[in-house]
View (cartoon, one colour):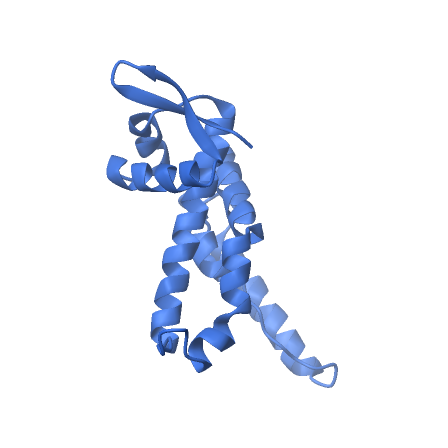
Length: 169
């Protein structure tokens, strides 16, 4: 999930690595750290990839907000139950189906966080948000509708035929 969020934020996912080793595995620890240092040197400074400057900052803020949200925390906490126990309808999630659902949720939460942060700065239409987010207008509208349903974003005014949205929180 972290790697997916980093990728959405425009940061190379290889910049994140999580390995477990015990205190008795000194050489393994050295090898892991040395490998990670080599990877970072190869990738170059943060911001030298797809996203940099203010855009990178906004994307990383959205990634942080997304991972702090209830939906992703709930999905991670329920992984074992979702994959091993049947739901009310007798259905079980396969690991593949769970991963697919998690990927969609990570993407949605990232972009909802971006929309929320954009609409905190100024009122925007879906057409204004789409190029900023790199999404088509229909996708932005779907996400805005989800945020409106939770009373997080609402229409502040209408210009012509376009509603302008603002964050409520």
